[in-house]
Amino acid sequence: MEFEDYLRQKYHLGDKSVKDYAGRWNGILNKGLYNGETELTPSLIAAVDSEYPEDSHYRLTLKRYIEFQKEHK
Image (cartoon, rainbow, N blue to C red; front, side, top):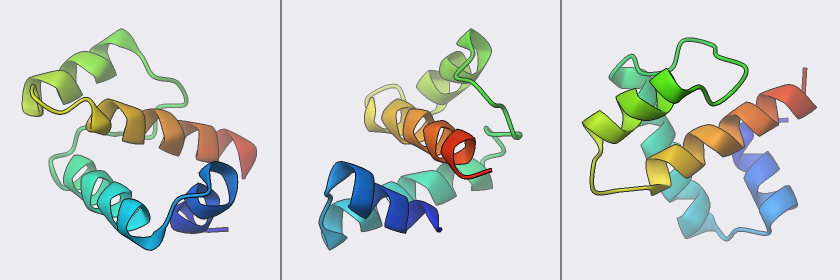
């Protein structure tokens, strides 16, 4: 299962919301903020908040991606 499918199924999100999550996730990856962490650590939160100080959706995207990873290993 892909992350986008997970979001649709678990959180009942529509295409626009899923596309927004995918965009945020790609931004996180492109900036090198996520390195395979299996939990939302204080340092990971600080890195994301520093890069995206006005948008808590990035933190939520990370949280949901880590949940996805745990549920679909």
